[in-house]
Picture 1 (spheres, rainbow, N blue to C red):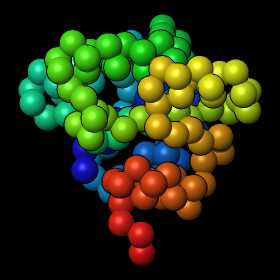
Picture 2 (picture 1 turned 90 degrees about the horizontal axis):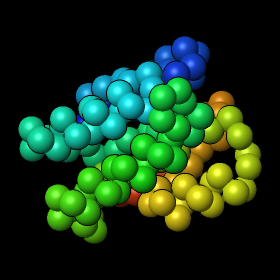
Picture 3 (picture 1 turned 90 degrees about the vertical axis):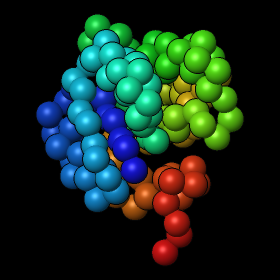
Length: 133
């Protein structure tokens, strides 16, 4: 599985990367702009990501803006349905309006920090990225 995470907090980044490394190659970006660039580069190479864990509050571009740009890029490239990258928004905020906006823009799930391995696995199972054990 090919994974990408966008996280600017050092502690959250280490924790999430440790979890994700169990499931495949995990690339790490530190801001929204870098995340979007990594996503586009992967598509250009024909090696798309299976999952992106996208922090909502980041410098340069916030997670909702990145999410919107990823979905626009997929539309532009004719990527639809099951071929679309799965996106889990991560946030320290439990604000309903931001979460709802993320779902309207096309995320499949969200997790509130601190992220627990069990919750991450549960969401990955729901997204058909992992098999239930």
